[in-house]
Length: 73
Image (cartoon, rainbow, N blue to C red; front, top):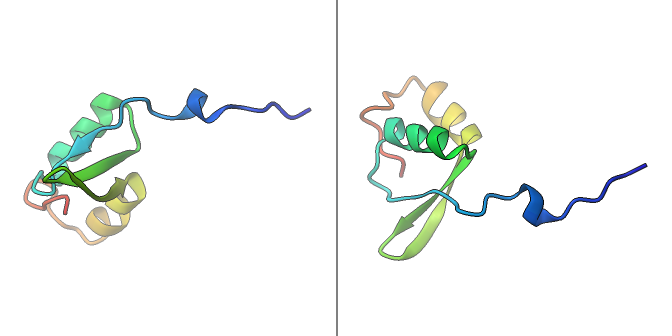
């Protein structure tokens, strides 16, 4: 028997929004604090994109970039 779920039951009601110049290190700390798997990147009131946990693994960890010096953009 399938149980139907409403999107509101599983979505984040208050997404975490960051600017493009925040470091990856600080962004990850915000993700952990907010218990979210992604961040909205906003610049000058314009949403520029979204960063996910997968993005961080593929683009930061696997490339051995320094999260304290690398900007989220």
